[in-house]
Image (tube, rainbow, N blue to C red; front, side):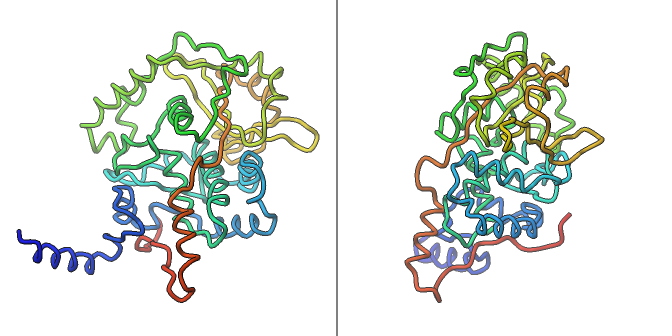
Length: 341
C-alpha cells in the first residue's frame, strides 16, 4: 500500500480510537489490554485510593524509607475484606489490575508496595493509572504485561527471583540463614488448570505452565525454618515481604504478608487472611508465634523491597507535564467507565 494512504488510514484510526496511538503512553500490549478492558474491571476502590492519597500527603509518607512507606500503606488497609481470584478479570485478556475494595494475601502486599513506590516516583497528582503502572512493574515477568496470562508471575519464589534480578527487591533468605527446601516441586497449575479462569479458556497455555513449573522446581529455593525465625526477627524491617514456606510437597510457598514492627519492638505479621473467623487484612501476632501456631507453615522466605532503581516512565511523564503550560496538560489516560462487575 502506498505511504500516503497508510498515513491517512492511521490518522482515521487514531480518531476512531482515541489514545490508541498516543506516543506519550507508548505502544505496549499491556496498555492496549488496559484500554480493551473497562476501567471498572481493571480498577476498583476509587474512594479508598482517594483516602490513601489524602492520608499519605497529610502525613508525608513520601519521605519515609520504602519499607516504612510500604508498611504504612499496609496498616491503612487493615480491615479490608478478603477475597480470592480478584486478578481473574477476563477470559482471555490479562491486564494490570487492582481491587482496593477486596484483596487476597498477594494483592494486599503488592498494592501496599505499589502504592508506596508510586509516592516516590511522582510528586503528586496521583491517579489509579499510576498505581497500575507500579503493579505492572512488580507483577509481571520482566516488568511488562504482554496481554497474556503467562506474563504474570504466579509463584512467590519465581516473583522473588525475577524482582531481585531487576533490582526491585533483595532476597535476604540465604543471608538470614536459609537452607534449601528439599522434596518440593510445583505442578498445581498444570495439573489443576480447570480451577484457573484463563487456563480454562486458553488451554494452549497449559503446556507452557507445566514447563514453567518444572523449570521453577529445578532451581534451588531457600527458606528459614520456623524454629529459627525468632532468632532472626531483630534483623527484619518494616515492609519486608514475608513469604510463608509450606510443608506440603506440592508447592514451596502458601501465603505472604508484610513485616510490621510495633512501637514496643514486636515484629508482627501484617497480612490478608482467609481464615473464616477473620477474612480481612489484619495485624497478626508476632511472626514467630504465627508460624508456630500453623502446622502447615514450614518457615519463611524474605524479600526486602527497594524503590525503582532508575527513573520510570511515570517520573518522566510527571516531569514532562511540569514543563508544559498548566492549560496544556494532558489528562490521565483512562478506560471507558462502566459499572463494576
